[in-house]
Image (cartoon, rainbow, N blue to C red; front, side, top):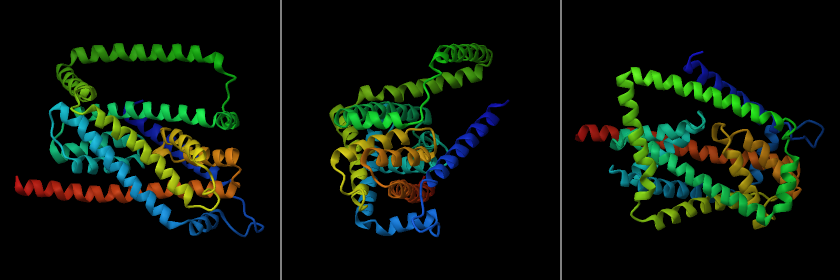
Length: 339
């Protein structure tokens, strides 16, 4: 089986899984009038009852977090010796978010390619900085989850117990790890001999790895590491504010306290980390479960809240990404005309 066919099959599997999880979540919506009201009418009713001021406040906060992330990304690129602007990094970031809605993690590569089109920053260098960003974000996420468990440990541990996780087959894990190691070792040996015999491929890999390493280590060359740490904390703080604003938009959730916002934010962050397009599916299953189990929100309202929250986020990404593609093309045409 060729690598292209394998990638296509993997994508189709993830797409099918996403559709199934969304469908499964919609099954939680129950009509209260004998079946006369369908799922979409329940969602529309929830949308109409939402306070639009808080939803638009969430959109403002979302774009602010994206702008800060773009500024932080620029800080990582500059030490590698390549100049960029916050405008170019912001446009590329938004294009990446748009691509992520279709291809899981595809946005990480596409934003690097978009940045290359704008200011010729090598893709391998910018991709190294993206990996650095992701490592830092994982650290922030782990700290957030740890803090959430400290604040709401009994509720969150109880919530974990409600998830359909089967640990009966744990004895098979060592065997699976051994098989995975052998496959990896065989692939590495085959790749080594292939690269050794192909000088052009070897030169390309050496150049790519050098650029990737340069971008990856750029965090150790920052002129102002304190500001970089501040931006990292601010980004996740703004993500938290986004959750707070949406929770305030709905009558059934606005009564929840700050600890509840923190717990739901942690659950949502874990769901969004799943290798599905923008967390679609995993988000629609985990977040309603958290609202129902932890805070006794009625199922219909929990599912509707989740669909509107995630849908509103998606609309923001589509709008920002589409606009960024248009502006990127205009800038490229202008540069060609001037240059």
